[in-house]
Length: 428
Image (cartoon, rainbow, N blue to C red; front, side):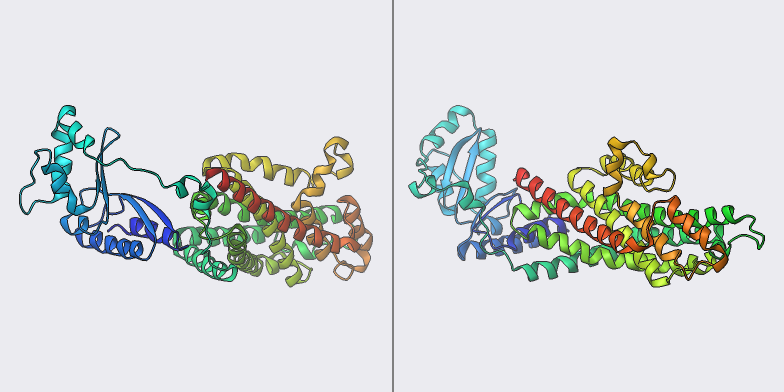
């Protein structure tokens, strides 16, 4: 028992602090583990680390490990000194401890049963505590400094390892995430079966309908990549945020290492998700674009949208708040994606929003990948060109869509790291 308690103490020791405050570190531990923990704390104290802690009902063995103890009653110091001096201090005021009796239990029992008048002589006998002039002149930054922080690569290596194990240990979330991904891919393949090779009849009929089905399937793929990448982060990250703030404040690691570790574990997840989904729907839909480019586009789109979720999670304190705010961020992605309404038809005062929506660039890039000139039948080139005019997409601007997705992903993650660090400093 007490794994969380011991882990919490161990986390505080990672950065080798010069001063540690512990609130009842032995609570929830059995007598053996409590003794082992206090032995470790004593060795740390003897190595130069100052340890201040409260203790709950210590055994005789545990209590004997302390160098100095202080008893308080109603804010007044009743005793301040070594463990060996407790019995003598109380005996001088007429309160005698029985032989073979735990001094800690004796002192606490007396402090709870004696009247204020009976405690007053004990308080008066305490030597006043004087603060060293050197401590009085020290600023708070001297106590908060963490000169023993590990190097950047050590932080990154350990954080990546922790993120990976945390990811694979959450079996239910992992199964639900990939299960939903494959279910949506199967539904998309069934609903848009063979749309990639349908270009109307030879006489030119049904061309418009088939093109709408084709582009609708691409839009659905992009929308699924967005939603399936955002939801897991919005549920998990607000829960992890307090852990980061605590460990950042104690100087365990920096914001850059934390942000990079999350990205290094998260990005391969997006790649695996999109490859697995594409294996299902690509041939069912009979898509014409290059398989690798199509998957790469959806991976970039999912990463950029997850960056948006990461930013939202960094400024919200609960899962409920993040989920409630999510529609305000995702609905504009669809509205300004250029599929339901052309950008030229959007009111001028809000048209700029389309420039910062990753979904628009993702949809533009996936359209350029799918409807290449070689993929469109020779007798349907005019219809293929009309697709780009309708959605205001340029075949030659694919590189711009690619740069925009990468820039948005990096920019949002940098902004999320800045917000995390800022909130953590306020928490301090």
